[in-house]
Length: 322
Ligand code: UT7
Image 1 (tube, rainbow, N blue to C red):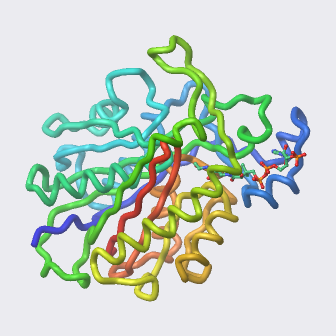
Image 2 (cartoon, protein in one colour; image 1 turned 45 degrees about the vertical axis):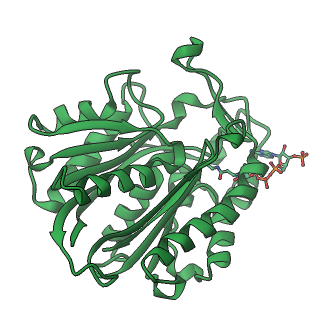
Image 3 (tube, rainbow, N blue to C red; image 1 turned 30 degrees about the horizontal axis):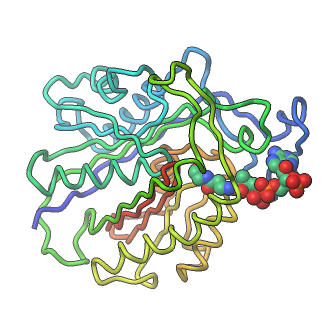
């Protein structure tokens, strides 16, 4: 059976680090409140002349280096973002150009904070169906561009960054011991579109800013994330005890802890980067994966479960044998 096996990961964070204390200068907020309610201590913001495809290109080159591949070795690039440089062409085609790829195809996926899980699931489908042998999956965002800097309930939560992962087709036995993507579970429910959205876009003629009913999103998040992770594991006959690492979307430490508890996985087996990155939307999972590989947490053979939820609402999970 064909499997999409991870060959490389990489990430990039913009140089500018913004600690919580910086918001105390302009907003009625505090380092204590932000830390206690979200777990975030700092985040990175892109420079004025730095775009989402710039961040993505750095991450893509790092992933290529780990995989020992050149740009033209890649058949397809699937880039998850809600903050592409331009309305079109896709940020993926910009990365394609930047890594010197002229033989493949590239496109963006937009599922907000669940974007990376959606992109990974689609990349896996391209490999499983034989439409590609090597796929680069990227999550990249510049959410600092869509913040309302007067809204303390949102602007302290988000950050910028990018992560990339390269999948390659390999033959497996078709069981849960195989390396590669073992299962995926995707969901969305547009009835909840008003809980988390940007109040502008091309068709409404303004860029818009992020708006969120934080408490409501929180309530949905814990329930839906635990369920989608459970469902993805069940699809391959596995359970929470089989999991080496949960790599959740990094939005809020309290959501991460409550979801882990509901799932029955202790925090020692959960990768947490939210304190350093903030919520980087579609970039948060590949940033966490790449960080965990770099610091020796995730190793070949580990069973990794990623789960994410965001605007839509859209949510999902992917089970990978590293
Ligand atoms: O990535 C996509 C998914 N997004 C998420 O998962 C985000 C989900 N939501 C959350 O993470 C949390 O709901 C927040 C971190 C956004 C908020 O935490 P909370 O515990 O739900 O707080 P809250 O919204 O109930 O606000 C509590 C109080 C309010 O004041 P009152 O009404 O009790 O007087 C807020 O006005 O905290 C106030 N508040 C703040 N205070 C200081 C809100 N933001 C701030 C702030 N600093 N930055």
